[in-house]
Length: 118
Image (cartoon, helix red, strand yellow):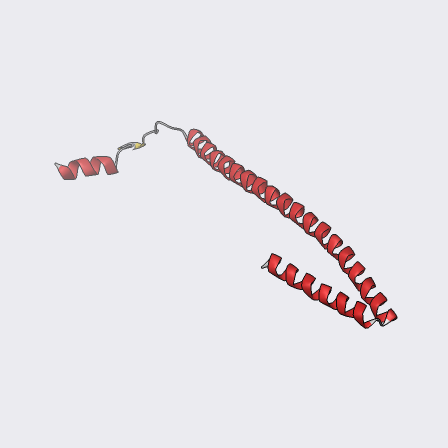
């Protein structure tokens, strides 16, 4: 009996005169496959859209961070140029007391910056 049911399932739709028309036509099957493909593409597009939005947010955050770093570098450059000008003044006047004070203040400033960044 099992052989008969397996055979029936295997040859279902075939009659002696040829192949019986199936419930779905070829056009309907193709249309159904196309709809599944479109649904898959829509899912992929939405994923890509979300990923590109995340990339955009990340780029904007990095741009803001780089702008802040640029501003900090500009302020540091101004501070250092002022210090260099003071060193030039000290070396030009060759005052040993003034030079000692400037070197000590520079070392103290360096140590302060070192401990603040650590």
